[in-house]
Length: 195
Image (cartoon, rainbow, N blue to C red):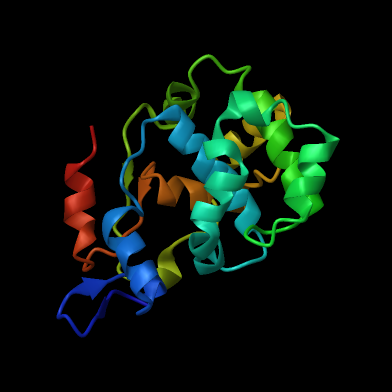
C-alpha cells in the first residue's frame, strides 16, 4: 500500500489508518530522528512490548507504561525487584507479560553498561539516517542486515526482545531509517531533519 489521501487532503503512509491517535503519531513522531539515549531506550522497550500486538495497542497505553516504568529511567528500572515485577503484573494499564516485563529490567541493566546508547546505535549507520525511497508498503522489508547486526549486538549485551524485526520497527520509529512512503507528506519533512 502506498500513501493514502485522508479526508483532510493530506497523503499519509497507509499503515496509520484514520485513528486520530495513530495519525498524530505518524505526523509528529514516527520516523523523526531521535538522538536522546533515554528516549531511544523507551522506544526500544515499547517495541519489545509490541511484539505480537498492534502498535496502536501500545500507543494507547504509552502514558500508562511511562508511569508504571518510572519514566523509563534505566537506573531505576535496573533495580526492580520481585515485588515491583509482581506489581507490574497486576497493572491493567500496561501489557502484562512476565517475560517482557522481566526482559525490560534486563535491558535496563544492559543499557547502563553502554557509555552512550545513542552514539552506539547511530554508529551502526555512521550517524546518518538511511533515506529509503519506497513507493509501496509492500517494498518495505521486515528486517535488514543493519537491524540484524544491531539485534545481535544488543542480545550479546543482555537486551531482550530485540530480534531483527523488532529492531527494524524501532529503527523506523526512531528515524534511523526514513521509511515514510515517498508520496507521504512526511517523507521530505523527515528527510530534512537528518543531521
